[in-house]
Length: 135
Image (cartoon, rainbow, N blue to C red; front, side, top):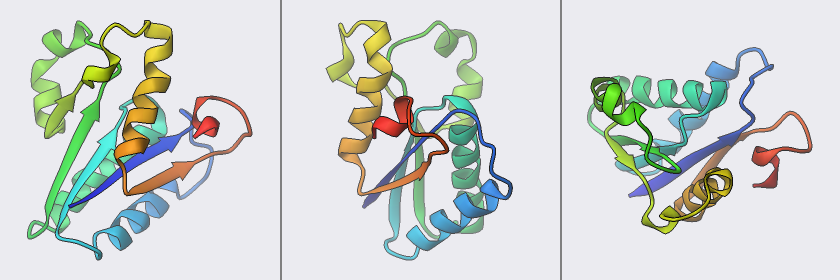
């Protein structure tokens, strides 16, 4: 099984980014038959990546492709929008290692958790600072 995660700045200013993400995923899908894609679900880049994974699941039904939302901590939205999360994600992960981590540090630690478990990283950076740049 191949694992992949995404890292990028929240805003996407590059035209044709959807096409570039879809191409990167399509190329990756040629390497194995089972995949898990980790997304943090924060910002426009993560949304575009998750959409591209959902598209790949429809285009390549013979492959086992899962999309996992990795959250830094439990939130009330998981209860109030449960149907949404169950529809759009194959699984929701809140890493045990983040239990007790201060919420201001939890996002960065969640990002590190995803990168540490990924065989592949699809990234989008447009500036040389910020949380996405660290990785």
